[in-house]
Image 1 (cartoon, rainbow, N blue to C red):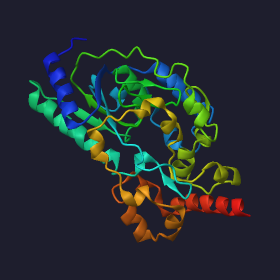
Image 2 (cartoon, rainbow, N blue to C red; image 1 turned 90 degrees about the vertical axis):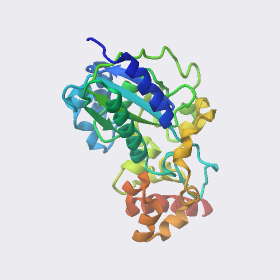
Image 3 (spheres, rainbow, N blue to C red; image 1 turned 135 degrees about the vertical axis):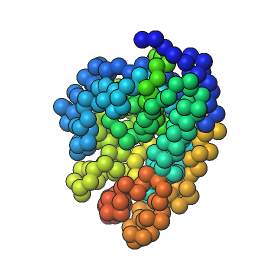
Length: 317
């Protein structure tokens, strides 16, 4: 492939950093056979639980050119978010990624701005597609291919200088740009902090997650009522879980002028199970408006809160 617009590539990288992205990388569109082999194994073993949407769009996951005709380049970006401003609260906790405005909107808006910049600088017309968890894209695999990070034992992408508290986004272009090299990096070495600190054993081994035992899956993705065993596993998490991210030494860094884009909302930082159980429909919508928590809905939030309260009552007895 003849790579075009090399000077443009570096100006795009600079613009992305100016927009607040901590890392940006370029990869050539190609089938992701090895990543898809791992993905299909996860599905066949049932480790995705009831997330049926992961079983769809297999051809597009393998080859993003199925998402946009003529796609030649994928730009991968990472935007950090801040840790919770207060520690885990046994009366109720919301994961650090969800106590702020919806990252789909923020990352998407910034990528659209980046696409507009590319079009303004390119000598030829440019087609583009912005993806932020709204298309079947193997985000971590492409981030690795674009050289912005490596997947750790916690199955999360670890970005040098930002750790794994990062939101990912992708921009597909029908313009060929020279790809970056993947990082030659072993982010974890002998560290097993994430495996040791996962309270449910969801990380069954390094780099292998059983979502059906993951607190984030149970409190966010699972739509039905909990079994008794599932309720016991959720600790005091009302939405998500920060155990493996908090345990990771890479997350001791404080990158982020860009984290100012995700200022924590006090009402969510301080939300307890008692508060959640007292919410009405309108109260829920007001509290979670513009955040990822809206997709949870009041019924599941109260389910999660009941699990916390019932466990507390058993402990008292």
